[in-house]
Structure formats: C-alpha cells, structure tokens
Length: 254
View (cartoon, rainbow, N blue to C red):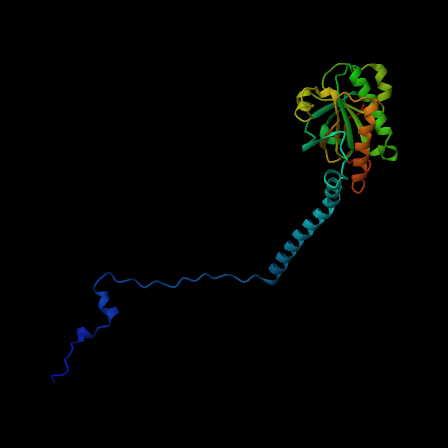
C-alpha cells in the first residue's frame, strides 16, 4: 500500500542500541556496597559508659575550679568603685619555675615545692643590706598581722648568691623559708618595676604557684599597712578554696 513504507529490521533499532555502534561500549559496573557491622549490646553499653565518664569528669573539674575562679573574679573584677590596689597586679601571671634550690642547711629542693601556700617573697644577697633587713622585718610583721590567717602564708627569702648569712639574722628566720636560687632562675620568673632592681620589691605568689602581685619598691613601715590591706582582701577572696598547709611539704627551709 502506497501510504505505508516498509521499514527494515535495522531501522527499527532503539536509540540506545543504535548508539552502541557509534562509540565504545560502557562496561557493566558492579554495584558497590559497604557493609557496617552492628555493635553488640556490650559495645553499646561500654560506649555509653565512656561518654558518661567524660561528662562526669568535666563536671567535677568545673565544680572544683568554680570557687577559685569565683574568688579571683570577685577580687579582680567585682570590686567596689574607687578601690585601688596598693600592689601591682601581674598580667599575665607567672608560674613558679622548675628551678633547683638549696636551703641554708644544704638541703636540695625545687621552687615548685613551695606551691600550696600564699608566699610573701623578697630577694637579696646573703650579706643582707639595709633594704634586705627591712624587708625581712616587714615580711614577718605582715604575716603576723594576719592573725588566724597567717598559717596560710609563708614568708620567703630567696638568696641569689653564695654569700654567708650573718649569724645574728638566724634567730629571726626560724619561721621563714630561706633558699639559695641562681639569679638566672629568679630573673626569668620575677621582674622589678622599670628602673628598679629585683631586691627593691616584695612579691606575692598565690597557692597555685603564680606570681600575681608586686609591691612598690622600698616598702617601709608606714606603707606596709597598705600592703596588708591587699593581702587581707586576697585572704578573704580565697577563703572558700585555700587552706593552711601544703602537700607535699616544701623542700628546704632554714
């Protein structure tokens, strides 16, 4: 019939089949599957226990740190308007160095062993000049003036040389911690005010071992009352977490 045209078999090939001859044939690719094993009930319990343990440890750390953070926040931030420190706050604070020390009796120790107490520190050679003698007297008096809080404070004399200490000073040093420490170790930790020497100041270290305050140079009896007020504020602010004594006991002494 003239209205129809007979098509041969080749013309009836589908488009996909026809395209096969026009280029390289794509190879059949296997379907990739990744098989994940299902954890056993014991593994699930162990995983949950680990997660719970981490959270518990984090909570305990926060609980332990909270009183310390709160006391420092109270002292440094939430201060009544107009209050000013007599001593200069150190920022950033400097931790006690891992520095060898030797007591007057020859016992070898380390400055890190002093952690655990507030430390009122002076630095002077063994010959102990007038400034040194005045500082030692003020250190003892400041500690005694704290009353029942005095057992939370140690007064420390650090000697950066080998000069002998005069025998007349020894009776007054019975309650002091006196250690010989190389000047290089001290100057890498403590620092004087610009234009002054290390031995012109007294320094305050907190129970965590951080040097956090420096009192003005050449402190005398009249200005020591202002240093006492700073120390009393710090004692009150840290009362919730700081107790007298340290573990282990400080190495060294007289």
